[in-house]
Image 1 (cartoon, rainbow, N blue to C red):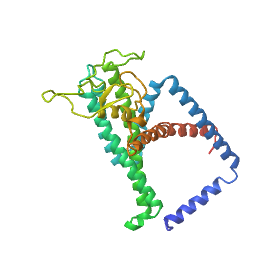
Image 2: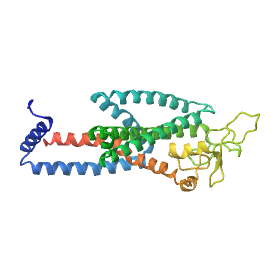
Image 3: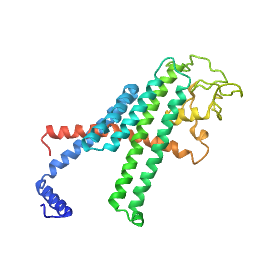
Image 4: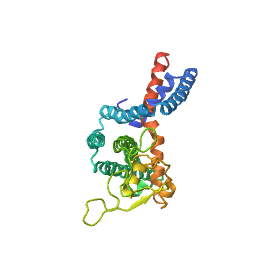
Length: 304
């Protein structure tokens, strides 16, 4: 085997695998049925869990998304990913700590949204570059730059993974921080009724004055009026809707029309990208658990 080329070694291993599993068609069919049944049952259970106990579901999902990749990173020696993961975790832990303090400092909401909006934009751009690199490789454009197909594909897939993973992770952390800050600020409660009166001159997200005089301390920024006539800093309400996955008014909880809010067609892909991250959350957090469960069932039944 040592004298064979890598391609010839792969062919020999492939032939051995076929010889080993010849005549096991019934067993393989049973394993496929177990996989399909487990996926269906797991999906139903997850949907019911999310509907009945959304808070515990979100916390467990967030914890798995944060920890599961770390296991594979250490096991496969992906040290570059580990360094980025540690940096992201350290800054996010500090921001989350600030968001959960009582009383809430007035500058904290903007700090939270600035950090998560930065990660959102970086993950969005990284994912786009990774996707373009993969497509260029599939069309053979990498040859124009004399780059090997496997190197170009590895580069594209790595960037795509970074963008999607941190995009999903930051959205869930942002939602958690938004919930803590909203309850601390006290503009709405579990009953759905505002517990504080919102002045027309105060932004419900950051708690600071919307319009300030030249001699006053405050935030000078464009404002945005929702369909419920409540006015917010544009940066605050965009962070509330996109980063924090909130589609309701921070004060009265009325539904926010994102199509009206993002009239520029070049801004709408950010909303679609956020929906894509929501769809991928299941694959990132629960797919490894389900696959491990399937392997455990096959092991117990003696299937190989």
